[in-house]
Amino acid sequence: MKQLGRIAACAVLGFSVMACTPTVRVHGFAPDEVSLETVQAGVDTRGSVRRKVGRPSSSGVFTDTGWYYVATTVEHLAYYQPEVVDRRVVAITFDERDVVASVNAYGLDEGRVVDLETRTTPTAGRGLTILEQLLGNVGLGNIAGVIEEN
Image (cartoon, helix red, strand yellow):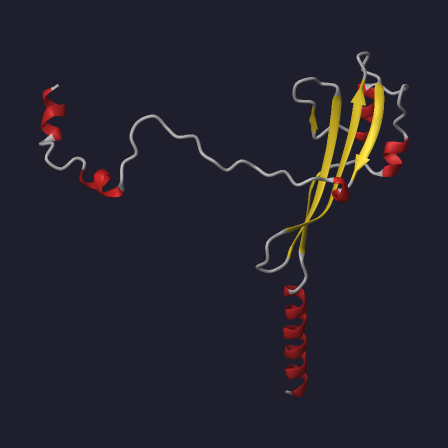
């Protein structure tokens, strides 16, 4: 009986420790340093870069002069907000002949916080209060009869 109590205590202790470990998630893909060393500016083309390091996460928005690989590591501990612990962005730019012009890697410490605009665009028409919405149809008569006549 004493042995069973010890096993139960160890199990409870083990589950308590497991509950305190963060959940780690990795989103996206960014090639490692070894893979990036194989990409040479002035030598490689889009096709050879695709074969060496894979397809990009995204490309240029207005002009397709660059490929971007983005990987983010997020830790989530219990009920706390998820925290970004690592981010790696690799930017490979191409010239007009689709030959690699440059290869740059950026980390979390080189990022900038961008304030998003949270204002909303007003819609056309008049805004109604809750009471106006609830009582707006009172006294309009029998709507069902009007629909049946047409």
